[in-house]
Image 1: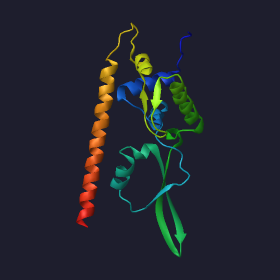
Image 2 (image 1 turned 135 degrees about the vertical axis):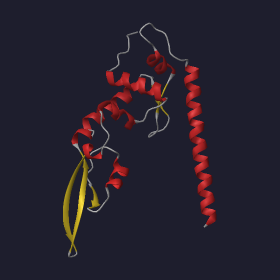
Image 3 (image 1 turned 120 degrees about the vertical axis):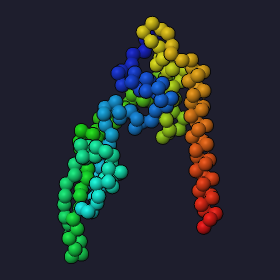
Image 4 (image 1 turned 120 degrees about the horizontal axis):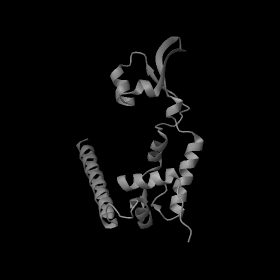
Length: 177
């Protein structure tokens, strides 16, 4: 049988999945250093919007990642002053990069190295993918597949407990009304 060849992106996906126990489509954007999609609708704020609000919404270094321009428009006889905020091109993922990511993930699923339980859910390593990602140059493994699976189960149980607590809090709030 011929040796399976993987691209740099596919190797990176397997390593990231091994470290984080699962990976989502959007997490792979990190490989290209991208954070945003291009937005057709641009965010607008009133000109008197405080800097703390922009920092809270977009992060500490929003000035380096976004184009911020002042503009004014007239609506029903009133002049409205505001800010137009759009992500810079270098931080936006392109359609061709999205296609490469989709093909890489699909190729890993077809090779049996990843599994996706639901259409929009996370990708998890299969045993074959785990063995492929976990090997060092001398063939040793870092942790066993059983430990890896137990780690995934613990994370899923923690998420389920958070969801139950959220549901109980929501029911408690609704009962107070």
